[in-house]
Length: 516
Image (cartoon, rainbow, N blue to C red; front, side):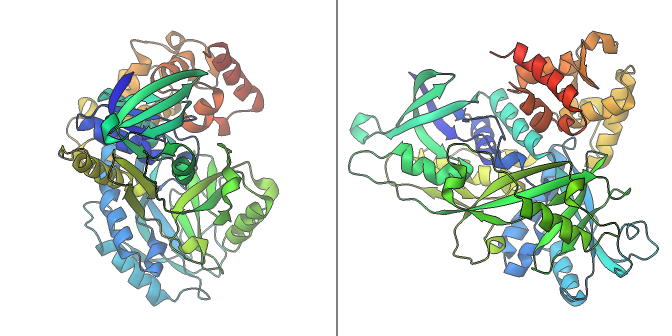
């Protein structure tokens, strides 16, 4: 039987972040994910690194400040998968008054220190390229800063870093039983795992429940208390957020934030060069909606809602039949008795269970605060194990994020990335510019692990689909736990959006031929 200090259940952003932090402190860590990394909620976000401007209306000042403190820190840690983004908020006189928005933006600018992101300002939309896609009645607005992230790759980079620091990462591995031992039995956790039909028994001194939407189910059905104990649990509210993707609706590089009559907001964001991403909804789900590991699906009325709300602002109405792709994720929000699902707190809670072998459950959270959540969790686990070890992630780059060997000393993340693209093109001049930029975005300074000593496209192997060569597919299988076409096309990349059905089928056939 293998022995670990900590077993982390769940390979979403919180589980991967906690595994990374713990491994970096020298703990022996095992992460078990029942499906693929970021297969559910953590690849289905609005993909923003942001403080959450709208949470100010719910007086969530602590959450917004915490998220804003993380914003620039994260952008520095991985400039290839995260970058700054300016947001345009057209002013709708029928909604919030201008003074309220100015006050909110002032707080947003000053709740946490900004080193290089520009602050907010007023904006005249009429005559501006930023106003051109909008209806003429929207004459003025506001502009402010936040950031964008490739959410699925953020999870992947945390898992890569955890593995590089000694953690074992198991995907498609289900925890079937986690039995808490009494002090007389050793005081840890005996855990049964099922991977590819094979059973494995491991022992861990501590257990982390980072199962996201399934965290409550894990405690009730999988984690078993020692004799005479009980595992009290919090309750989750499962709130589905759905998104639609359409052809590009505007040519500039800013995003829009639109205020809706129901006092919710939606975003319209430049996406993958050729598209616009619009979302999100807030639909409360019953627990049985995600029985097993069911994938959340958008409903027809959600598509209509997003099209109608976007059409309130865009000159050219948006119709459901123009939607090219959709995705939905289930947010596991801590039940705080809020009546409105959109008002439920996005903050997190770390809960310990009893006085026996350490058990830590992660409730709630948002992608922007994952690093701080992981740091807090690792601090708490160190105390529970009687061996507190110092935090380290605040100043650390994620894999591929340290570009110094290519460009020298870092200056500003967005400009550093552009210098990196130029350096990559100079070193691998055979790469077409669009391919070089895509590889730079996906892999950062790890790109040479994929390209190796290749001196021509031919040396990258067969071009399985446009711009996707065998060298990259081998890298994704061997280094990034990608075992099927969905992992390649929709999580490790978004190439599925750019490919035809036949091209996606070619990738699926290549992966299936090499599946284990």
